[in-house]
Length: 526
Image 1: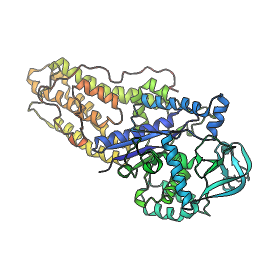
Image 2: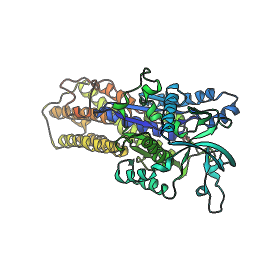
Image 3: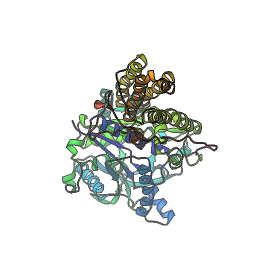
Image 4: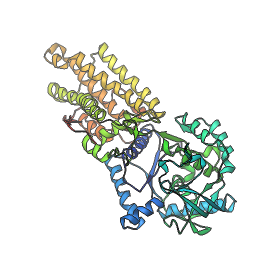
């Protein structure tokens, strides 16, 4: 079986990361960790988009070279991914010579087969969005809306890609491949965008106007503009055209084994036109077959009181602050539990506080702490499965057994929040089990010794299963929990190895330490 190749949209290095960036990377990291435990080899690529007119202007304003500027912003992203335990296998930076060589080789290939042409154009240009506008972008009043920022009229010559030649193919591909886009209803947005007369795509900027980019190999008076640069990272760092571009000896993956990607994780704002129109058509023009077109996983936005986060509204949430307050794993849990993949959610101070204090500290952490504490107090931390059994034990075992298939089904279909809920049924059942069996009362009656042994064992065993299922979500916390239980996942351990009876007779538990200490928060997190 080929590796599970997962990528995220690379982050534009014109400003530091916000919570939307954090969610996307955590989402991809959770899936990468899940697939590894599900028996797949995984290659996870992420990175940074460093070229463009905005970067050039921001660097000039800061009195830096563009490279110095993007290096500084990139450091913020790398630091956050380290903090949030996002573990990628490959790093894409569009200023990397490896990438530049592939982009130029690819552009030359398209030029040689007649897919690129030069033409003069006069029209209106959005400085903010770095694109020419058409009448479709005008509002009802005939003007361009505020979202386009400063709009100027330009007349210049540029290179174009024959996008229009491939639009009918793309429409047919979308209709015949319902799994191309997740969630499936997003495909309608793409098909609607493809209605009307197709336009070709401008792919260059004159070097006098934009020097911070990759020069076109067949006309160095122009630099490549964003699309054939930023989008190409998904294949350039996966080994595409490695030999032809001179990258054969730089240690890239084997493209034939890695491609196609099973998951491009992107935000809904860059689905149309970049990833669902330009990207598959670019690949089709390069000769990629229908079977080689990657799958798009489209996540929603984190809003604040129904409004999209933006600097102008002053409602941008800093993930560094949240991670410092709620721990990196606490933030990872909140981000993946409180949003359904593909849909929007509102960030809430009250909700993240509750998710930490009630669910993590009061539910999950308290279960671990009292389970180990009771075993330490009543049995010197030594477990004895014994032969005692009753309906309550059987019910807890059944809950544990049922959780795994439900968890696997949900996680495999990108319903991460439902996967967490499936695992959480064990947590809820185990806490209810403590309340109903009352180990503290059993300990007072020598005649109930066998039953007490079984209760303590069932609680510890249930926690082993919980720690494995929640490992992709909260890897550090679950490793800490397993250390307290005194059990480690063996190298190469998979979900299929998870059976009742992971802890053997005489198993020694570790010392209890609060996993998620309760927080006393009087001010809002942001």
